[in-house]
Image (cartoon, rainbow, N blue to C red; front, side):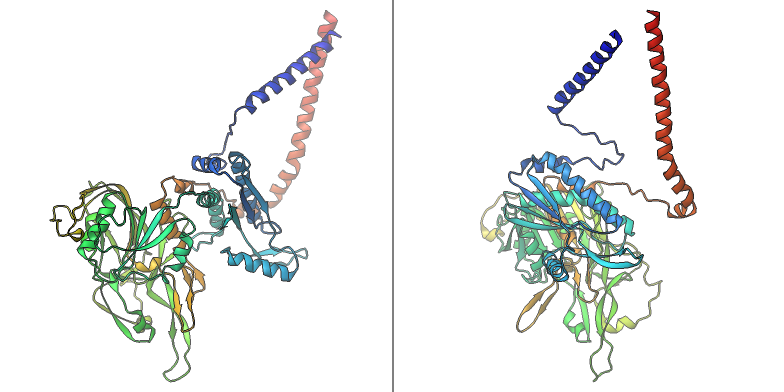
Length: 572
């Protein structure tokens, strides 16, 4: 009887201790992530973002229903991330999973059209049916986030030609937190930074930057500014974009942007080194390629960059339509490789360009880094060519007849030439040690000779930021940035430029989330095939065998303990 009472008391004490520990732990919150790559650890920027939202952020994920196992895992990871974010968001995050394929065919088609109109991209997969066959189905590895009446779409899966299918899925895993938090952060932003597109030097017009402006205007105040030599006119802008100037900059305007940089402004330069008259080529004629006299070379050189007066021909390139019909007959346009449209690699080691698909360029030039190695400016390549490149110096004649030229490997003897880079640090003014009283329309101003720590992006191709425009008598068609009408493909231009603007404008460290690495642990498919029966046998027998062995050991130990207790009782 005494032994029984003792056991009851011990049991009650254990229960009380467990309850006490739970009460103590409930007052504090912590989570332990034992994975080597910390895949379940939420970034501090994410925690802060979720803690600051003051209304419901509603996420609709369009990944319910049947889909391949890889996408089921992606769905599970999205749900896990949403659950984690809910904890830090104090229930201000709500989500739901939707099956886009539910309903009859008419309802599905209408829903698919609605999703595509929101910028959600479908992905076609093969799914095994009950009869052992395979059917094709569109799935939408995407979501929409709605916050205070504003809505933005997320595409979690972005197919990249450079990666294996497994690597594409893994990249989607890595970007779940970034995609969700960057969207919630932008939607919940109370102040909208100002961004300026510079006008007045033959830059791209409103139509040619329309798609990017439409995207950026959801989160930034966008303006077009003509400098007119007024120092300080850009002071209210967080970032300035110079998009493909074709005319010479005056020294007065150069001073304006130079002083903007010296006082902490960030600039994205998209500069063509060469002028090409594409209209002449479209008519089947030739055109002269001559140096673009934009008058910015000295300023960029002082900042650490030189855009060379050359043209890149790359064996990794896009296509253009070429009329192959005999003269006088019905036109017959066929896509042909155009070596002057390089498809550029993104630097996967940089948080700005990690995971970015190939970026399409047109008549790009090479970009060199200049200046002392002891400079306070850090330079990082972001876009570069393939390893089979030919460089043509200016001036040159370009003709569609070059499509028929025989390609010899010996001519394509350049590799991985830089086309775009990010520059960070303290820049020296391009007007240092110059007489300044004739500038700023003769008005005095405070001159700054060296900048604060700022960021600058320079690309040796202005078309990276330009969306295609088809102008007709009745209407003007605007195509998405990065979309190639002839290849029917969307390249990474929009994601690339958006990340550049985010990096230049945002000081919260949001892109740090983009830098996380989740290890890709792939199964050895050959080993699985060779040892299939053994694996099945082990997985079938091992779990129940382990349970049986544990049960036997537990019974024997318990019996031995009880026997010892009875013996002690008898001795007493």
